[in-house]
Image (tube, rainbow, N blue to C red; front, side, top):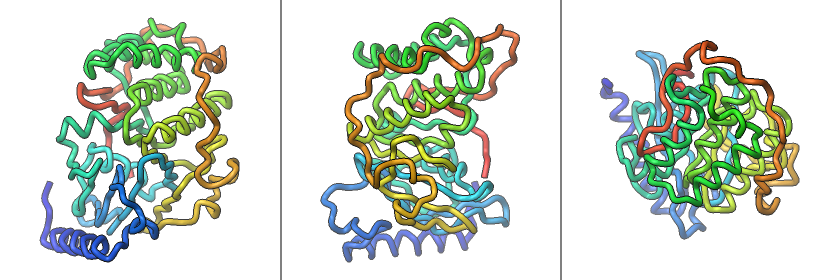
Length: 312
């Protein structure tokens, strides 16, 4: 990656301004100065572009443990690109990303283990069945039996447990999305990033996802998801809107995607009954010849499901 002098100057200016703001008790959120803990995710001064064309500039955002954030904005605003930068899949031109108090560039295995990212188009290994994908991630992360049992309950709740001997390439879009969500959430990561996670899901699965997001927040995770529609029963603690190359925080009560929940910070739905989810699924799997899914899934030190491509 080539960084020009302008980008270096912007990065220095952004990081310097961030340091000064922290010294004065200010941050990307108005109440940051009142908090004793560090954010799970803290990004500041981020800029990104292709060639001479900038996608967005001076992006600042923060999420704390237990918070749910929505990322909104029009198509093509750069939401997917921003999420991939936060997940370590792409590198911003300038700025800094801190995860759990440490600078994150995508290389730290210890930090990557704490991040789950579900891209807008989940992709899987062509030669592994759904069951083998689950087992691979469990073994790679040396997961305890409790996590394996949790994965089974999630598969049952999403209605795809009976199809895990098939290849994901034979699944419908909704079934692939459900599998991706199980892989991402079963490890109980500290930072959850999701790009349009509800798109292909049926109504029951959307409700279940809302409950799982609430559960993740209650367990101390920070959750950021891009969306054009509300997640059933979930109101965000913070909404970031990306448009015209700038990111701004908007009031959660003003968000057009948060109208379905009872109010900001709605995380009190109680424990998720994973065994009581929808019984069916949204399509019968076909055969292995349904075609390959490009890309990879779940490196040994991360839980990431997606195409790995570059989309604005």
